Length: 139
Image 1 (cartoon, rainbow, N blue to C red):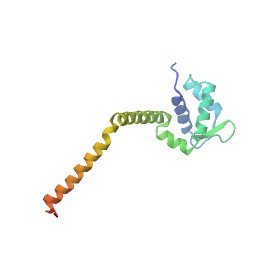
Image 2 (cartoon, one colour):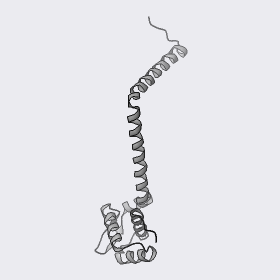
Image 3 (cartoon, rainbow, N blue to C red):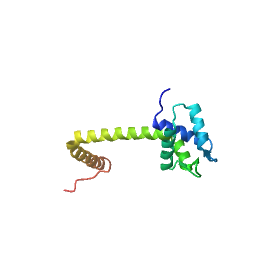
Image 4 (cartoon, one colour):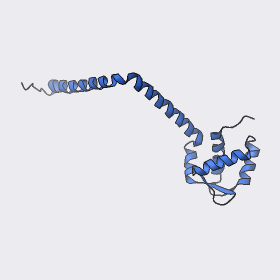
């Protein structure tokens, strides 16, 4: 079977937890569910995923051997979960890299572009004043 990525594993556990929003889930039930439906999960995978979810406050460990999804976890899951978060980070980093590249290539042009834009704005205001409001030159 194809190995699942870490983000998929986290989302799978969070989705399972969201089915029982008002209940504490025994780790035994989670482990059995994952072994039956997703054979690629190991005990170490589950432990690592639960630790990450606890650190991110998406689940809470209420009693030893039991856990429950938090409101933050429900909202996070509705926003797309870890997979969406990873994709958003990727898009953001690509955008930032593009901006950095554009700034370094065209940095000498920016002051000239700003100056030209300012001159055009002032010229437009003066033109509007002379044509439409019949301003006169004071000298």
